[in-house]
Length: 438
Ligand code: AVJ
Ligand code: FE
Image (cartoon, rainbow, N blue to C red; front, side, top):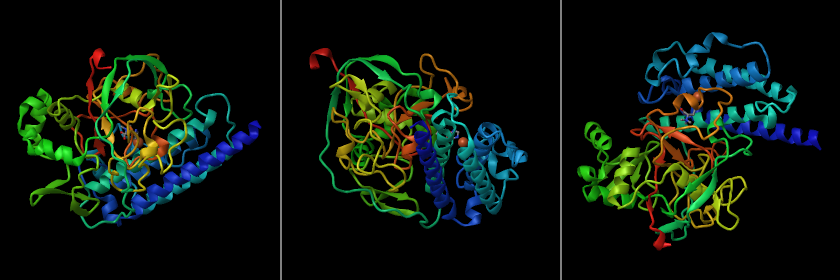
């Protein structure tokens, strides 16, 4: 029984490693060597850095740490240490070239799979349930999303291809009332949950209303047409200063097209689709839109309660639809489509209270900073989360069309600087409700 479980776990883990690598390969084989080495934006690494960094983390954690094997390339550790070199400086480093990087990640993977076959899975959390392997799967998938964002910033004709997201949809409008009271935030039981998602703890959240869907392009265009970008009333002080300095006047990648708007996506220019969630806005833009709409952004606890709380049982579940892993029926994840789906395209992914598309499509900015939950303990290393606590970050929840299911769940926490918008970031609004509105 037990050995059967471990055998299954090994197969699943190997398949997840393989799936992550298939995605990495698509993203890095789609361009020529010159484009792999080039820096497409000072905000991003050259793709060839991400590739070897993924291999280097796998070597450090699976081959050397879990496996106790000899280093393959200790000499390159420093080059691929994200803390040592900021992204803008990475193109100047003596990086592995495309062929060398490919050979390196391949060699590391062979060794890691060998470690997976031989390692004794025991009660230590680093190896229990294949946690270290899960961490590396998620790490590669996170870099695959980062590489997808790099592709979006790259100039030139389209090189990535995917079918359009589903277009059949149910009407979804208005807001949903989430009852006040305690709920369980975070998790102790999600096997591959990272340290910042732990431990499970009770949070008392006052009743609030949340939009049933993310804010769409057409609503966002109304904000623009109403002069939202020129009216300091809607912006926080910092947001307004940033809006002025950066000359913000529309989401990143939007441009005027006659009377309307067009965007360029992965090398293709098309008219903006009105009922898709808006994407590539920064936290300050999200905040300004919400103020203009007479609302606010949800807090991180409100977002998670909307996503996980089951009013029938009072229990927090893994996803809005329940405890089952995401399938293409539930959510737009995993780069199956290279765009958010229109609002209403995933009725099977809605929460019991009727909140749609919390998972997938676009990351949602929430109005909370990054802190450890009460009882937080670093695991397995401070550099994943803890060093960012209290920094100039805002949280993002729910994953995007570019996020893989392995790195997305109701408890998953993402963060970035509030001015960033090269990520696949959108938002939905919330507002307070008075008790007699219930
Ligand atoms: C959690 C997405 C903010 O990309 O900086 C990748 C994930 N950590 N390598 C990032 C991560 C180390 C992280 N985010
Ligand atoms: Fe990394």
